[in-house]
Length: 286
Image (tube, rainbow, N blue to C red):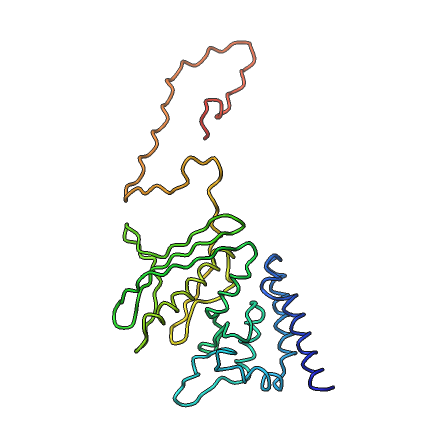
C-alpha cells in the first residue's frame, strides 16, 4: 500500500468515527448510548492514529499556530509532549468538532483546551446563529497579575435576539471576565484572552452544554465549567418581560385565607348524608 493510500484509509476511518461518535452526533442520544458511542469513537480513532501516523502527521503541527500550541512551546528545558499526549488531545479535539490545524485548540497541562479560533468557528457555523456582535470594555487591573474585562455579546438565534452581559451590576454583583496577566502583556493581549472566554460563554449559552469542556488558557489554572440553559425569549402577550428588582426586600407574604365561621352541626335525620364539598369548591387550591 502506498503512502497516499495509507493516509486516505486513515482519513476515512477518522471521518467515519467523527460522524458517528462525535459530540454533536451523539448529543440527542440517551445518556448510556452516548457513553457507548463515545467509547467506540475513541477506540476507533486510537486504532487509526498509529504511532507512525502521529509521528509523521500530528507531531509537526505541535507548537505552531498553523497547527496547535501548547504550554511547553517556550519551555526553557526544551521539553515537549510525547506521542501519547498528542494523540489523546487530538482525538478529543476531533470528537468535539475542533480542527487539528489553525490553532483551534491548545494542549495545556497535558489536556485539551479549546482556543479562541475554535470557539469562534463553532459559533460561526452554529445552526440558526447570526449577527454575533462582541463589545469589550476597558480592562481594570486587579492585584499584580490580574484584570477584569467588561464584555457584552449580542446575537440572533433562529431570529430571536439574545444578549449576554458580563459587567458589574448596580447591586454589586461583578460578572466581568477575569484574566490572568503575564509580565509584559499589553491591553490587546488582555482583550484577546477576554474575547476567547466570551466566545466560550456564548457557546455555553446557545448550546446548553459544553459536554465537559473547560475554560482555560496557556499559563492559567484551568477552570471546569458547565453549560447553561438556552435563554428563552419572553412569551408573546406578557405584559412586562423584565425582572423586577426588589432592592434586597422580600415580597410581603400573601394574607392567610380567612377561616369561615363555625356553623352548628346539623341535626341527624333519616335522610342520607349529603356528599362533602371538594376543597376546590371555594376557589382555593389546597
